[in-house]
Image (cartoon, rainbow, N blue to C red; front, side, top):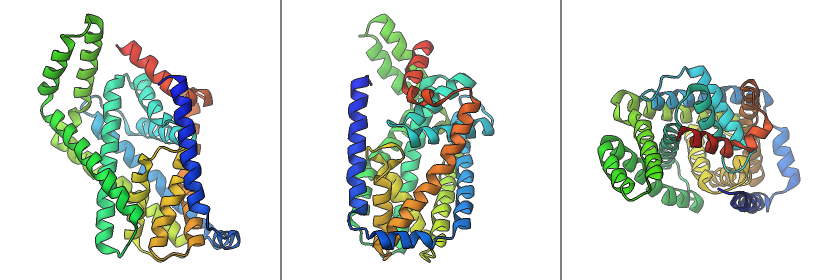
Length: 339
């Protein structure tokens, strides 16, 4: 993506975030909002932040399962890279954290860019399916009437189900992709064809984890576990607000707000996050000011600790703030060297 297109994408994301911020706060009464914040049990927020790091570690374990067919990488280095990726997504537009993850995996562990990128895309597909299952499970237990939740489910279901079926099919039939690439390579210039062939082989290798029943099972289980832990964080923050809503509500909130992450927005999904969290809470009967206060606080609990940890690990990697802004360029440069 060239600099002009990047600027346009950033501006669009900021505009979308501004719209959702307006929607989230348009009917807010400041006094009631501040009063809801003053009643928060702060120690429970620290507990929630600590629990969130367990979710980050399990996400790294999930990534390790997907990478094992490519290369066995120790869990702690992967956890650091995951934290750096979260930080990048939280502070810089265009999901630069994903490019940082891919770049660091290439730099530190010599994993080809296309292979690493394939595993990251597969992760996002599994995340989407877990979110859908959380929403559907919660709706079986809860009496919720929310057009916004229904819209999120209707839009995202065909996307993630189709993507998973494609990945599983290509993982099971790698030679089909090879034949297709061979046909395309035959009509391309020799140099470009060689690049495409190398990338396709890396993609096939990146899907290798889906061909192993053990690695696939580990990926599926760790996907559900990590997001179940994150739902615990949402539930703990509910308790900090003295909201006795139960764990299924936390699952519903997690599923809805993460699927809403498909909407382009500013770094950290500011505005989109607050709108969808507060919308679900209001649908569960929570007063608007309290629902918005909860949305703001849980966003901070999810956002701030891992961002600080990610920046700390980034510095330990010998990188700095400027490297976040250049994340996509770093990935592109690495891909050029790899090919």
